[in-house]
Figure 1 (cartoon, rainbow, N blue to C red):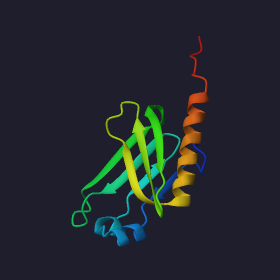
Figure 2: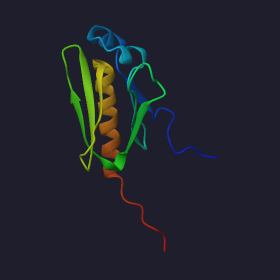
Figure 3: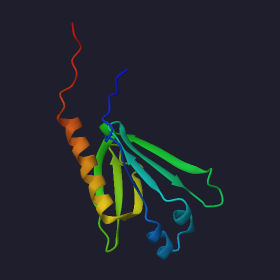
Figure 4: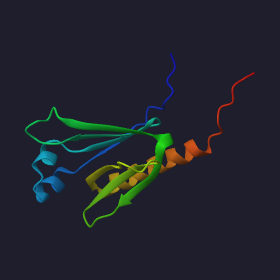
Length: 125
């Protein structure tokens, strides 16, 4: 069996518990919002309310459908928004540590550029 992805292909970033504490966000303090990227796409995992942790929003956006990755820099914490080519519902995670957010965005943009630069597969006749 062969693996298609490199072991370091997956990268994850999550909201800061300090950001949640100082902002009075109890749900984010207990259950930080996660954004995960790999060669397949970007996913988010967000618990909506701390009393019902089984109710969470898991969203996925394939790399081929990503239109824009926006890195909003704040004074202490950053935010990442990933928009689809349809533009309806962006994946957003706020309260991210600055260095992790920057690394995440650089990694995702590199993956998008590699996907765009790869020649399409031609069927063998």
